[in-house]
Image 1 (cartoon, helix red, strand yellow):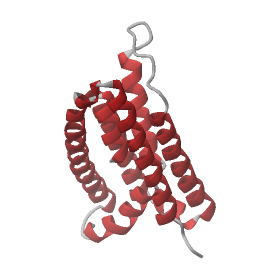
Image 2 (image 1 turned 180 degrees about the vertical axis):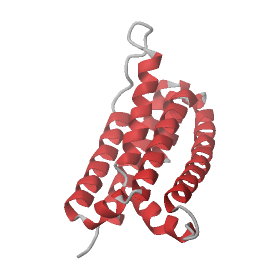
Image 3 (image 1 turned 60 degrees about the vertical axis):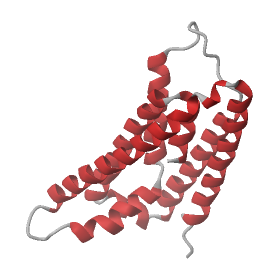
Image 4 (image 1 turned 180 degrees about the horizontal axis):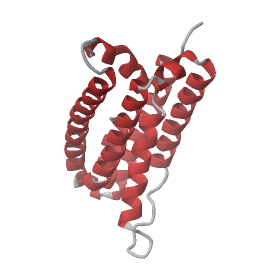
Length: 185
């Protein structure tokens, strides 16, 4: 969510919505994988869990660094809107695919809502679609809200300061993620 706020405030709503679509696809993939038992395998494998966890932390830190750097060239010759949106879509997708907390959510919460009276896979898919829809609405709200800050950020000095503050916040989130996902024992 912090990444969406940073992105939408800095690059605008279109970039934020591209990332939101990537995040939604990532949530859907993780939900289906959890329904098929992949999430349980990852959580039961220390190597897989730590690889996913460390990959997610490093990726968040890289996003923080990328946001910290000076702005990219945005002249018409250097800026391809489709490729920029594809980049944000991929980033949103990768952020969620490298998020073990999403898998933990599906494994810990979803089974409580699955009845033994009908197909568990079908129910898991319906619940995943419902969850992804609600999460996407919330993410869209964040994009719309943060996108309103773009006018304020037209001043290059304010934009640089804001981008760096938000980058530090994203790095802090990466550190919190590292601490909160660390399994003891």
